[in-house]
Image 1 (spheres, one colour):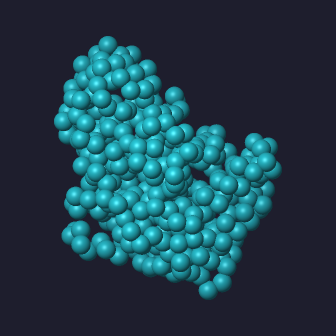
Image 2 (cartoon, rainbow, N blue to C red):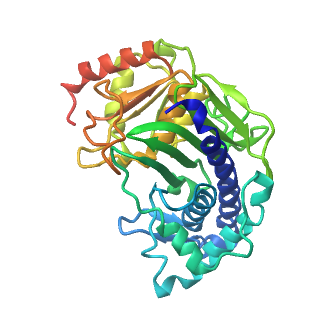
Image 3 (cartoon, helix red, strand yellow):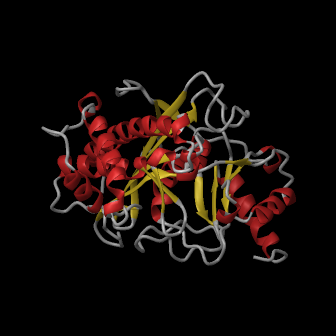
Length: 374
């Protein structure tokens, strides 16, 4: 498909991520109120079966994105792969939570026109909200066009007032065509994340942005988040040209359960990396590489863990169009054609700001792997 023919899809995706990010900002503010210190965010947070948190924002963003995409592109051939379902939200004991989701969604959609998006004629009811969330039940695959959504990537960071991302991508026949990342807490001041203003962006002149890219354009862009509106300008992103591992800044997941910190530390040490790793929640790690705040993202999960496409699709295309490289640890491109999971990954995922650095790290992985216990 020609990149130029994606103008409508790109514009809609960027605008709806702006709108969704505004919902997240408001929900996160409520989570941080004194009344939300009872462990469940004042009723805004629920635990999934795997004990990971899910919030009003997760369901709210999924409902908004689903509703807008359906309004713009119709429902007949609309395929959306997304993280959340309606199972726990539909239970009788979740009525209060569903009301909170409905209120957040309708508050956001009431301002949709400010973002150049359609708005409903009247507030959506609970049935409409559940229908929109439940519409996101596709499993993707090698054929056809699929929107891929992680409504709040890094929910733990979100709950803790830290970094998180709204991630939306469009995949066709297994290829990522476009990606959008909403990063409401990302410090927009140049090199804010690298230079140690804390991970939520405190201390920076401003924070919050949306990054986006189309496959094959050779360009990635960043817009500031503007409360209650859509920005008129965008800044071109360029990944770092630093190709000496000694000078590189490495990103890795915060949670030890999500990556083997010992292996990545040993790998970094073997290459002479001097900088302390930046441990960052969510796809914000891809954002940091795309805008030059970091050079490397490495993730080596346990062998039993299966990476999901919504955790990577948007970030991968943005990094690549900004000049970076993303592959598995064997140097192969990530395969988004196998459904919900990234099947066939060789050991882990490596994203770098440029080809020279990527080649060096792939070589170091092979050299270090034999002595590791993974």
